[in-house]
Length: 329
Ligand code: NAD
Ligand code: LMR
Image (cartoon, rainbow, N blue to C red; front, side, top):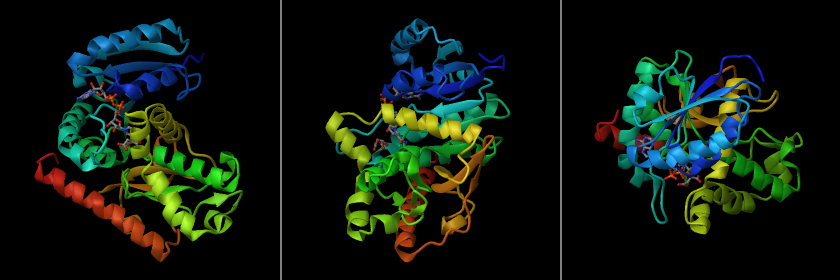
């Protein structure tokens, strides 16, 4: 085990479903490899007892890289000095609910947590938002943390990215490792646009390899975009292990770098690239290195893709208007 200082990682909603998968992966080194981690776990008061049970299980794993665990319900205490904050805690969508229904219920959580991070997080903090509606929650958090650069916030669209890779691999028979340059554009919602026109299968254009616009439009896009709802329907509760896995994939690439010659999807604050209104937290193709991300520039956007990107970013603009009206930003 390395002698490096532990990475202090905060996880909110730590007693929830995603937390139950995420914490054990973090503690076992899935994010940091040999570098130890210190876990700072935030929950609401009524869930602390459950969280104590989870901590007992973490102890029982005797993970060599787990340098310490602190739990609590005060954000300013738990976020003190954290290098990475994974904001998972929020009320998940139940059957029949749309993400919009969650804006008000969950918005308040992210104002308070944004403020707390602003006051006490480490100077190098990175903040990944998994809790839904993830893009707009990230926007709320960053607006409430004026001293933390907006580039330090991102929302999770890596699960959608991974889902898109998996669907394309199944369709083409290629291994997932052959699929590169996948992009999710826009919102982590049913309007998201998983883009095969810029993706590649074994170095060849994915849309051409598939050669089936009907499948692309009527099977691939809706399967990826509505996968969250399909899992809720099948499992009776929202995706958890896959969401935890994607949360780790996203944080690992952000901190340690994306693969050479490839890119990943992250929802980050728009600088106006690709016509996405400046200031929205929208998913883009990005390369990452040492905790920084850069939007991949210069991609040609065809008319079909333009319409899909615009539809998803229009939804994000509506969400921004709604939370502005609610006084959350
Ligand atoms: P869950 O209900 O099992 O757990 C959520 C936990 O958050 C609960 O333990 C709850 O007590 C806690 N919580 C609520 N308010 C809190 C607060 N203010 N501070 C700290 N903790 C708080 O839900 P889950 O299945 O773990 O999902 C968590 C979130 O992740 C949901 O919003 C869900 O929709 C979202 N999600 C996002 C993605 C994605 O790809 N972005 C994928 C799956 C789920
Ligand atoms: C998912 O994509 O699995 C989650 O965001 C759950 C949801 O509400 O769709």
